[in-house]
Length: 166
Image 1 (cartoon, one colour):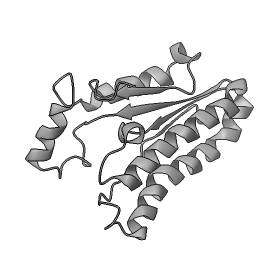
Image 2: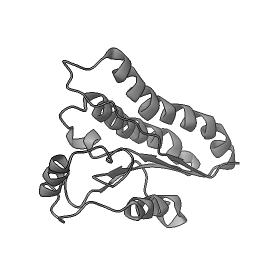
Image 3: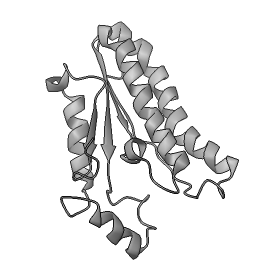
Image 4: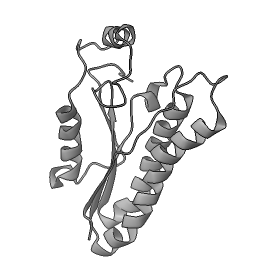
């Protein structure tokens, strides 16, 4: 059976809402949020029978603070946080924890297309003064996956260099 599930699917179709198509809205919600529902639903019964499980959902600081031009992405990642907190309440009695890692700006295929100007603007909003590294996100995921975090559920760790502090 599956002991640990990490939901890390993500896509963007950035556009101001006045220009955003319904197809772009639907695609982002389907990939980023509905896939999390489907994967969690698929593992819950086996985890409940085993009375053990770790679910880690990868959201984004955009789901906490929002971001212009990303209403669809921010809504999907915010929805993932609410979904995770609700599922954590459902699953806790069966020793299944559900937590969220919310990365800030990390070099990935989703950030490759940003202009140099946009990259500099994002850096100006990160108190640590640099983008994060993929291994820093992975370290947070590993923490939630390990037994040392067995008393931690329904929580969000921002891995964002201090960009969002509320």
